[in-house]
Length: 628
Image 1 (cartoon, helix red, strand yellow):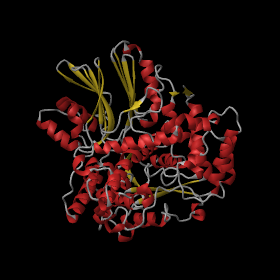
Image 2: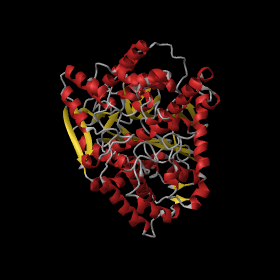
Image 3: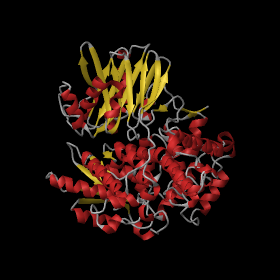
Image 4: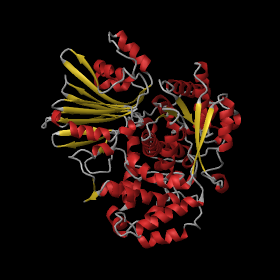
């Protein structure tokens, strides 16, 4: 994995501005700690930071290939999982490869197929190619947005980068935030509306889209979308296809020239990946597989089961590690480390994020990196196969809002009346919700399948509503977890892959009817059925438990104390956005408020609200954010 920076300018001679390019690129050193590279011409400048995973010599970037008098230059962040097939087809068409990297496969694919090359790629990626023949920049992002890409168009120029921090190093880009950006961080965050870059004039290239930039201007095109089709396979066929796709996906994602392992929680998703990976490495004589888990000191003393967290993970991690003979490392953190890492997590994400959930993953990744460079993780199975509680609860199905944000008042109560008046939170969130639903009706084949769930009755209504919830989850909630996974791991130079985001698996699962997907009335029932024999039955049918968070009361005390210091400092930039009397009342009562009403997702409750406000204040300070 890597960090990329690009700049095309029709007016300035970019060969004279290497200092700007280097400054932007060096902001991405954590993403690519192993090497850097630069390429400048009068019109185009590319910068690259590399994390070496495959082909140390043959994968150097920027990568340049020539065809006649024309030059094609690539900067690439990602991993391609069908490189052998791409290489075979290109070689049959007369192409010669200088190495075995997926980087070269991507570039030669563009030479052969042009912008349509992305339709042939199976992987996670964000890349840019300068095409001297067309005198055009081509940028692409993977189908589900596993790898990040942001851009800013200015008069006569386009600038793009893997992360916001790199763009903010450009002299033409300032950390200015308007009404939309405020709404995103105070109302939507830690999620973010697709395409929105928070800062004025910065946009995100949406998943499954390509960007073309020439003297004629900027074009954005969508090259991939979920397609609505009638699911005709019976249960046995469906089960077999899910199993085969998943096995193939995990095995493909084990490709690496550096040490590899898995992040193991003891739950269904990570355990299945671990089982397949352990067996595959053993067959290749590369075992034992290294596995890693995270916990918190004294967490067992304070853990209480609830609807969102039905059981502790520790015994299950030990069970899976023992069964598959992995070399396991358990990593535990104490409250002071977790609290202090809130700052580093904000810097890594460039925005306030999932509080201790982000911070713990950042700390976890630092420790994992000491032993391996590539990991596989179980994220996104819940989105693809319907594992979250909101797929199964009537309250969530009936709510006309994002189902992971039912308790929005928990966060609005601490915002200032002036901010609420300016942002009109219920209107803003409603508009974003309706925009997301409107996308479903535009999907190919939607006239056959999709109808507004509010206009249907009975089983049809339920099926349509769960389809809506699935789409919302895939396109509005899942990106938050993918952002978290990418930023926290890449900030430590660790590459983590997510097999459940293989687009073939997502495409197939999208059209499976809910009664089949929730087989036996269980969350992810179909997936469990498909993995029969891969895992022991007790692990296979264990109730879902989310990413572990700290339950130690010292965490609430620590973030409350820190937040108190912030609101008592009259120079704190967040003060004007807060309802201070309401916040102080909440802080006084926080010890007595029961958990179980998260304001975002499953894990973000009152302690995480305090931590999120801390991150917000730090973000405002660190980036010297300005408003208009």
